[in-house]
Image (cartoon, rainbow, N blue to C red; front, side, top):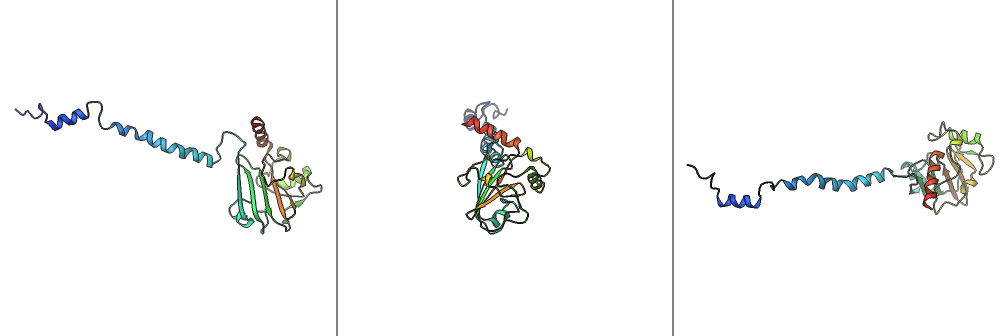
Length: 202
């Protein structure tokens, strides 16, 4: 009669003692999915931030470019922005289309920019004509679009939109002392929510 099965060797007894029933070596494998999820979670949260997925509307980003040519190539600036500008600064709403922009530039504006009759106070007709030429505002009633920024920046003088002399598509544009200033407003649907959040944070 074969006694090997009934009388396990010393090595087998040692192995069983080290790993008793129900405590086998597979347990660490069950931790792998949880460990993998823990490693991926920060990456997922980071991706949400980079895509602009936020809990609120008052979110913005600051960007810059050495020249206006480079800014247009990178998609930072609108096509109407003239070549020859330097030290470009942009503040942009991550949850909408509002923008503030300045650059050093003392040349003329392109023909696509329309002069307004009264500085800082474009009429509904002037706004409608300008907005209809911009893909982001085409078809919108000027009454649906804000006339004041919710964004701020150290380089943007408060109330600068009141010095507007031209409309370049949806952009309110002015120039002073070799600097070009441009403001692109958001819809009131977005800017009203931004202001509500800003008031809650005060």
